[in-house]
Image (cartoon, rainbow, N blue to C red; front, top):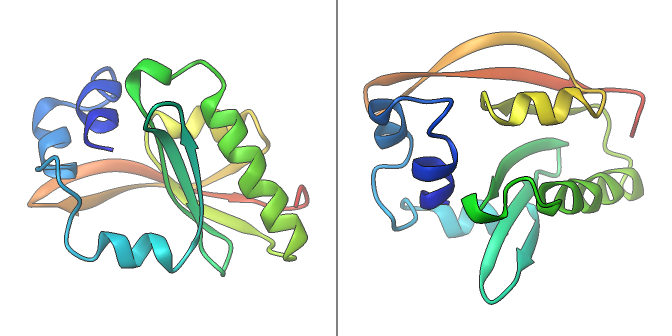
Length: 137
């Protein structure tokens, strides 16, 4: 996750924004509980290369792919697995707060932008987008 933010998001977010978003290579306090409380899909190839999480309320919470695996279909496979889970469990509509990088990925899959927003992380405003998927789940 740290590498996805600090290397994979270089084109979208400034060094200050990336540092505020993920200041340390170790997971933040409570991160394990956050992941375990959701449906989590993990892609592995000699270690973790990506993961996505979906809450029981249909909120796509986390989506990360290692920088060297971006653009190689990992995100597509993770997303498909989460969408299959959402369909199987009747979760609709789906919602998320998408980064500048994740927004086009979701828009190509029928998600609509509800609002642009700034979230404050460690005192720094970071742009993301509230998005929703209806009717495709």
